[in-house]
Image (cartoon, rainbow, N blue to C red):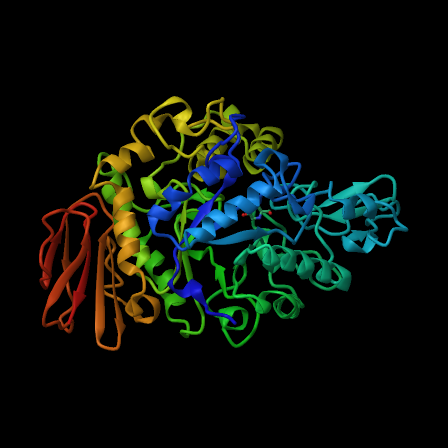
Length: 555
Ligand code: NOJ
């Protein structure tokens, strides 16, 4: 029976490599997570989304899986994992695992077998003859999301295999019914071990266009759209839902490039039996052109994009997030130069997202306001950054200074610096040198310090999460923006059976006038949450302080 528990849930994302190192080898692991379960519980979150912990050669930090039924050595053992999930469940926290099934690792036994043309596993992947007389040109012009062609030539069999990510991440052939059954079996294996759901990695890529036609020439990362939501996507997910998801009280969230508010109904409505929700990235491209090149953040557009998801029927559950392991940190991305007001700015962002009709996802470190890191070229570890730098160096070295500038804003590495627990050695993340640079600001920004201050961002998150819990007006109230065109303030009303909640968040490091619309009527108001101590009662004309966030219950 589906309880749809995710409608009243806040999810905390853990990127295990960077969360906490339990065995002193410099790499985060499952025992490290176990040691922090009380901390996670203290946030008031309902579920954890755990980035991949399966066996993997780590070409893409676990998003290249070589065994779907076992745990990566660096992260521990299946017994550790069982102890971790039991510890979560004891604390009332559900576990959402990452399901990476658009591709496997090239070290997965299926792919190793598949290199042999006569193997029954050949058809588990997408092998094609090349173009040209000698077949030495890739079968089509598709590019990988990590730069370069999406095809790799295999000398032995004289054919090419498709990889929409690195060449160590060959794409599975979902046209093959055996592959689809394998995926359902993997999901059921983990459900039977107790997991509560899956975050489905690049799931809209699974169905490729018939005949694999050439796409629009790709520039940078704009290969995306041409692979997304292929002809049999819905059929495959529906089938997976029948064989697996629907049999458990589960929650699924797809990383779903190509699903927009216009076609979301067909993908996530409760009536369609596919996924329960998706991550959209439209609000993440408000400050990046082509997903990569920085441009000025536009709050009006940001609100508009989120509003479109809010207006979907109540049987479609939106999600909201400001960070994940693929995005730079949200400070100062959406709030400009916060100077000495980092935590106030973080609170304004938190207030803006936590009361939307959505399942909010909070990424590790966001709750203490971790920031981007001032990396030198040699600090980058992510395959995407490393490849991008190598390509620019080779193809257009003159653009290197620009590339460096872009990475300082855009690299996925910013989210992957070790979690800052204390002001001690290695930020309390590990007793050994961490696999990745620790952000030097850990002396000031860390959990220990945040715990010690009642007015910290961390404690604001706790208050806000606890306040929203179980409130019908948050779970299912109607949503409307207040002054959608205001370029500094994100304000909205939620309304459910006569209960109303008004959220006002100043996104700027300056005092801002905010006038309620003339037809905005209220008899009384009660302040429910604020990030300044002496917050004012609601009035028609407000003068908001820097990053001031106010949540009122109104009648
Ligand atoms: C999306 C994941 O979030 C990202 O980290 C990964 O590199 C790609 N999918 C490939 O699996």
